[in-house]
Amino acid sequence: MAALIHGITTTHPLVDGNKRVALVAADTCLRLNGMRIRPSRDVEAFFWAIARGEHDVVSVAQWLQTVVETLSG
Image (cartoon, rainbow, N blue to C red; front, side):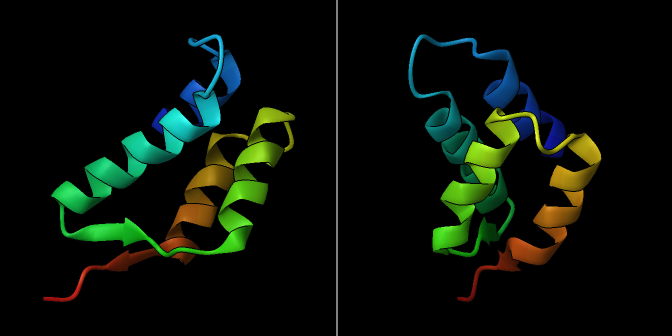
């Protein structure tokens, strides 16, 4: 998941919306497996930081461990 987020966010495969696509792709994969990224204003800031080159795949993986939660129900 970290490689997916980092890859889409930093390689800019699209003209616009790379951070949004990375977030939706990751959240969709997580939801298909009974999890989600916990909603927070910090999520957007973190994705911007990835795009600026402030995080590598390892730090994205560490961040995911703190923000992914199991869906209830």
